[in-house]
Length: 533
Image (cartoon, rainbow, N blue to C red; front, side, top):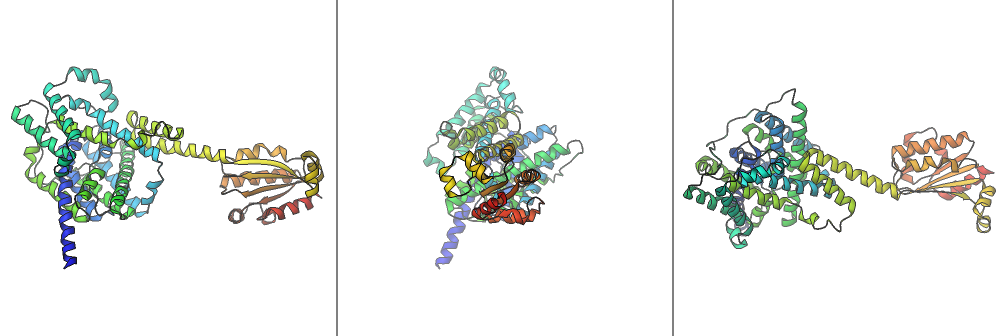
């Protein structure tokens, strides 16, 4: 009896959570569809197709998927870059879905955790800024512009052509989405309140403002994604961008869901579910998307805990598409713009923005670079440059941690206590090259630059016992150093940790045979003294 009551409670929670998430998703799907340039219907098609597929096949049971701000911006960029050809833009969506499925099959879901946080922060804040800038013109009743930079440049012209009625609607929309009391938002989401109230005001007052316009009723028609030889590179790059961005967005949302519900999602299955969903979007003319954080949290807070909640969310939107399309056609674009501004503000990474004064300068620099490139240049360039810049800074830090010291070995402990370094060196004829820290391509130059300090002695010991790792560049540099010293008739001994010892033996370098490799420093020093005579 208790088990049946628990199951009924779960079903009730999933149904209520899915319905609530669907109510929140409706205005966002319409707004994202309009903002993308593909039309309001494309937003609904994407929310339904992706939401249903990801709910059934994904690895996060309570996640709600659909069009998101970052994915909408990339798709809009694709549509512009491909000359407004929707079929080729859907080709990029298909490629993105295939990329996500491939990442899931290759078990790459966990790799998203290795993207530096400043890169994610700069990217998300950049996306939020793009959304806000692109909505300036619609907020004022002027036609939307294709890029954020164009929106800023055209701002004086936009202000001259503003529509007072559209400005009133957008102002009231912003007031509602930002200032609706939490007690009301728990019952009816603020975006839906604004959507209904402002649309009713516009219709009853007879405002002459731009509206969504005709939305096709019924199920979407089959679309065939297109590819062309001339645009092949553009389609592939944009497709990979959509795939990687959607993967990151979805898995970050999955982590949020895990933290709230104290569960654990399956990253690889989630990628496969998202990929299949986005591939389906490409064939129904839907907007690509990802796991939506706000809608997922709304679902969880409303009782959603299982896959049924995502299915209910998608079916709710489908019912609206089949029966309520004429009503949605009267929604003013200024109202959708106000809702999207709230989305853009919410996407900004305030966690990082609050730490700009106290965070490490290198992290702030990476975040700023990614932010600037995202807004002014290109999304994929921003992420790629951010990751590369982070890697360069890490390499620089590792290089600074590396150390190299050359010192003469006394003939014995007594001479070490009573003689100076120069005198001890003449007595022993042995020099120790002490390498500390990471030994890799960024630090090999230190070793090669100081080879002259070893030449002139009778034996040399390379003490690498404190080296945590050694890459192939360092192994080759060490081999070159040993070869140069052997040409000078200098006996060479190399001390390395056991793991690196085995690694060098597998390399089978002629200058680093087993005879010169030691695990114990004292044994190597003893052999060096004997070789020095």
